[in-house]
Image (tube, rainbow, N blue to C red; front, side):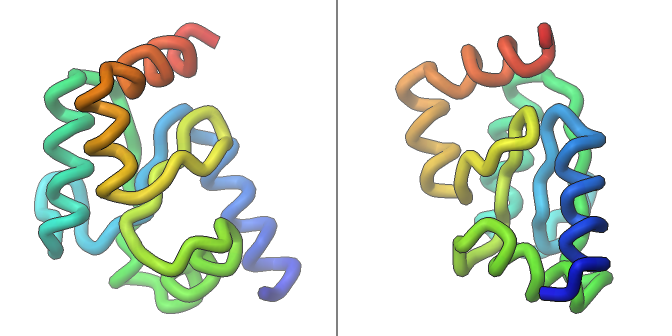
Length: 107
């Protein structure tokens, strides 16, 4: 990964309390896993931003290296990588996601 790409991803991750790197947008998810993440965050009613990896090949490849996670979507909360669709579903079902999100938004 180039230093420029790392800096770009760092800036995106650090500028947004909740950020999802996904296929498509929150209004038009382009895959089922991305849609799962959008539905969960919408259910929580929290503000979040998305980056459409289909629009940017560098980000699409770079984010996998950045997080050391091979799949998309990828969710970052308060600058920390949380996981993908399966992990978000699990955290949501346990009630842990709501707490994590509330703490992030309060900070």
